[in-house]
Length: 259
Image 1 (cartoon, rainbow, N blue to C red):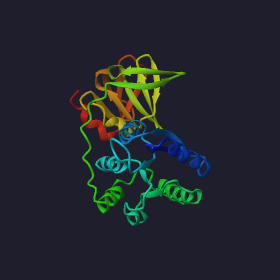
Image 2: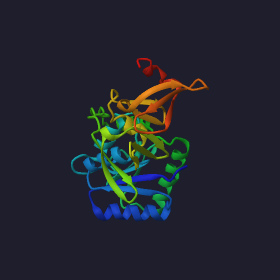
Image 3: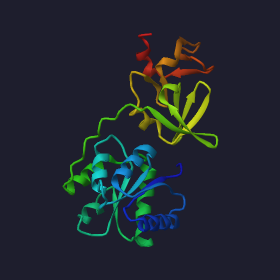
Image 4: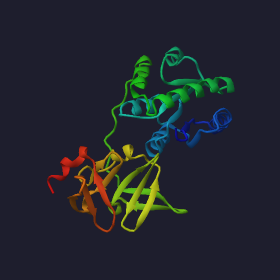
């Protein structure tokens, strides 16, 4: 599988750093993409970076780790959750029987190694976060999953372009293409790269302005110049300002009948 990614959220900086160091020792392949000091920043970074795993301190200001988990459980997918706590009164037995895990801090290398073994097995079998298991765990803890908030359509994108980070208006985007755990952003004058997977990006785009043409590609409707059927019977999209033509999957042909 691709290099696994993780976020660490704890309101104590030395404990965030300690856990990152311990993880580097027992799981060198894991890439910690971000660290957060509170639940609000953790939620924002999870939305932005879509890590495979989130290590969440239960007691944090703004939003607790349980609050973050409840918000994630209200969506369709999310990271695998490992709760971190300084106390053992948060229904530890419930964690033992869940797809999630827990760590009493500071976690020993031996205990962390057991958690890593469990996470590796879960990631190998089910790369996407087990939201149903998380919901079941929250019910055991008496926490109701929170409905996912309505997301305003995306307006700007921060994208890597060579050695720079560009701020791109959504109006400039011709199409998005899935690229492993990244997404390529194609403009009329070039290409950039963002870390947000296409499946998460889809939730932030206006369906009226951006049309999905197959599982790995979303096109801005205003940059579609024409469509035609090639010699193999496939529907092809011709773009304004770019030379390539894109194939429309059979699952998405219906939306082009209005053209």
